[in-house]
Image: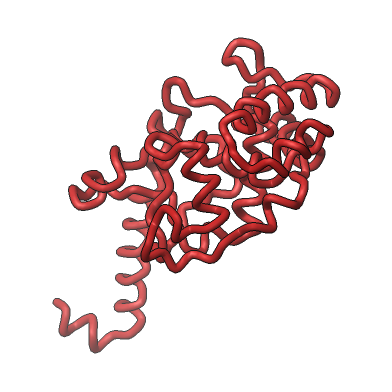
Length: 221
């Protein structure tokens, strides 16, 4: 059978096409079932978390860190429960990543603290002695783009029907309301930080990128 296919390029190509097509269907179909729907308790990102996610993308964190735990014991032992399709229901774009220069961050919010992230981003080797990650001290000085994050939240709500509503505790109100919600969420994070410049800036109404990034990282559980 196989030798016959090898001698008939046309039929060989057709056979390869059907094998790949079948494999693709098997891989894709589960994403249109219950498995692809938001898992219980899953909420859309807050405006502050979206701002942090934008920083995560801007700084190319996904180039060295994945957010996809595969169902292998070696991975679940280290990173926790393997990833489920429904956990990515509100991710646009997906940040699965394909390289692990650094550890997977899918569940980092469950075992790292605000204080740890602050130290790590300021000087990685202070908490991970052999780390090759560069320091990100500039995000302690640059302001987070809250307005763009709010626009993104409005867009995914209207275009993709992301459920920002009172029922799940993620109501997306006016720009003024959003600013108050961002400030309240940021206050919790700033209170746990030690950097005086970040605290001083917050007292003046400025939210630094580090605050938004930590909000995003803390949401990954």
